[in-house]
Length: 111
Length: 113
Image 1 (cartoon, rainbow over the protein chains, first blue to last red):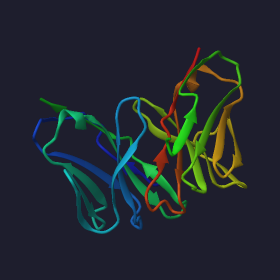
Image 2: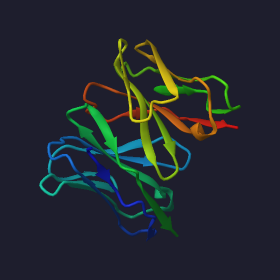
Image 3: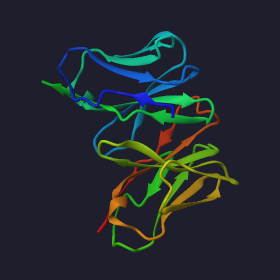
Image 4: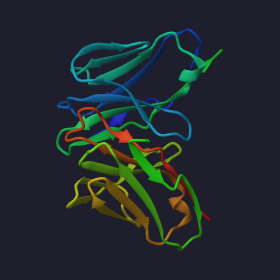
């Protein structure tokens, strides 16, 4: 069974700090990776996608991918209380053509 | 208008009742999915459809059925609702191989009493 693992948290960071969220996956041949943000009771919202090793930046968000070590991470710079949410990591399973989701990491940003 | 619309947004139903949750999309995507989410358990796939004539069970299909009425419409039915089907239900859509991930609907909060 292919897996995507995340620490459930909560990860608590002060406002203005960098939040670092991590995800590991079991399928070595995965090619596509996604980060979703989900506010309580709301639907997941795609915030980042990454396909190549290295870093990809979009505003305050940076996704990092290391295929050799099978991990993908999300950095949130200058964290704001509005970033408080659960962050879901998702990995494309090339055999089934479906996304495999982690259970999410809850982030709390305190003022 | 939302790209992926789910109705109803909230529903309270009694044990044993049949209930249908509906999903429609304007994304033009061929692939549609139904998930349920429970606290601490993440998203669990109930059923998925890669095109109108293709319906597949997910990891937790028991007690559920689906109908793909058109490319844009995918309905989830609970034949005889039970309390442990109380959850948040999401519909999602994607292109082939989901190069841009999935697009989720706003969800249906279902309570079975």
